[in-house]
Image (cartoon, rainbow, N blue to C red):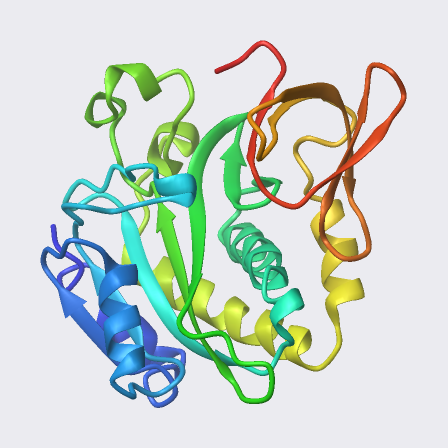
Amino acid sequence: MDLVTDKIWQEMSDKGLLADHPVRYFAEIESTNSEALRLGREGAVAGTIVVADCQSKGRGRLGRFWVSPAGTGLYFSMIMRSALLPQYLSRITLAAGLAICQALEEVGVFSQIKWPNDLLLGGKKIGGILTETGEIRAETNTLVVLGIGLNVNTPSELFPVELRSKATSLRVHEAQNFTRGDLLAIIVSHLDKTMLSLEHGGFSEILASWRQRDAMVGKELSWLDPEGKVVTGIALGPDDDGFLHIRDRGGQVHQVLSGDINLAGSK
C-alpha cells in the first residue's frame, strides 16, 4: 500500500493543513531531505513537505543509512525558514522530537526520546530526526530542512539482522496497523504548534516537556567525542541550552554538543 492509498491527501485536507503545507509526493526517491534542500534553495515556500513511500538512499545522523522500505514507514521532510540565531538552530531537533512524541500520544502510543534525535519505544528505535540547513544567515531567515523517519507498519523481518535487537515499529510494538496519512497529518499539526512556540521564545517550556520523555537520564552512557575518545558516565540530561551533560566516573561533567551516544556496553 502506498501513501496515496494510505489517505495522505485526505488526512492533510481534513486537518486544514494543505494550504500551509504544499505536499510533494514521490513513490520512491533517494532522500526526502536532499529533495527538500534542493527545493528550498530554489525558493519553495516554508511549510512545503516532501514525502516518499520509500527512499533508496535515506540517511540519518552522522551519515548513517536509514532503512526505508516501501509501504511501511513514514519518510518526510519539511522546509522551514527559521529566524533563530545560528547558535540556536540545534533546538529545532529537540522541539521536533517533542512534537512527534506528543503526536504519537494522541494515537495512544507513549514513546521516549534519546538525545538528540532518536525516538524510542520499549527501549528500541522507532524513528529519527535529521535537521539540515542551507546557508546559515545571522540576519535573515535560514533555510532549514527537518527530516523525519518513522517505522510505522514495518514488520521485523524487513529490518537488517543486525538491527532487529535495536529497532522496532509501531505495528510490532502495538500489535496493530496505523494509517500513515493520519500520522503524517497529526505529526505536522504538532510540529506547527511546537515550532511556533520555539520561534517565539518558548524553548524553556519545550525543554521541560522534553525532559519528561527523556529515555537516557540517569543511565550510564558512552560518548565518542569529536577527538575519538570514549567517555563513559551518567547522563544528566540536557542543560537549559539543550546540550547533553554527562558526569564521568571521575566526577567531571562534560557538555556534549555532538557525537555518538550509546548505553554503556552497547554498540
